[in-house]
Length: 465
Image (cartoon, rainbow, N blue to C red):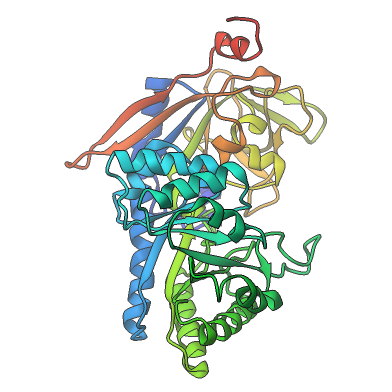
């Protein structure tokens, strides 16, 4: 009778997988000996496997460039990293090793760009695409970047006042983009994105504010769908509407030569994950070329702004099961030694699911459980996986420690969770480990941040000076 955890996984999924392997009854992730990591640094801990960042960038560049070659597409492809996914220095440095560009979303992003320029990680020919609603400090910082000679800084206009605000601060001619306010899926609570300018208003906006403004040159149209790049009627319909605006605008604005399709490549959130990236890149390029040829305009250069896809699959979080509480006849609560609300806030805020697997004891019998965090908050729990309406783990045994891992957690969790700041119920933020690969293929670990201490939190709260 197949009652072991390994039996459950092998019967349910195609396992092992490229990044998940089993060795000596213990899980390995991209070859990382996770139990050894726990033994050296303890749990809870978070880690970032930096080589995965470069791997995903190179994969996307390959898919789009192969599509460009296949369809004899005349434009170029530019990969931008969406910094809001993770602003950390180690992430930006790894990403920028791959000849990419940057997308920003707020004022302090520009300070990071200037820091990277001082370290020669970014040059003046690196595109800096400035998205977001712009006021005061953001406008000033963009203007400073432009005035200091970064001509490939392209502010993407989000509302009707931004051009006037920029021209007051920028001392030379500069390039801009316009963001289209896409229409959301019917299930959304609103019809049109709050970001950008409506489809029907783009051309009148160009005629009124840009066409006769000698200081401003329109180079880019920006288009993004909140639900991502998906092979469904909604996405392709919105792309067609965007292309209608682009071709109409191109006919009256010769300087327009770039289309930014934003981000939206999904990351793996289940062992049953299935997404054909190469097909989607190919079809996007194909549809853009066909539409432009039908309208008699030159196909644009293509920009993407991948954030989660760049950094998400590099991250993981490891916890120990502290105790099991049997609350009624059916519900067993496995308590982790941390909090979901503080360490994986998307699991609490938007019910996001990550890949969750035990680290050890795969050859033992399993049981259905719920996972609870340490805060005294009823919402601090994790109760189901993306691929099934339950969580199964090796049976709890107080004599045999059980460790679990959440994987592909590298995007947004630190910034949303308030890295380095106060945590709900003053649960300390765990250690953070960086993992790099040496030239000989061996792995090198480095402690990036110690687990928070009580003194750190008391100082923030004003108890210590």
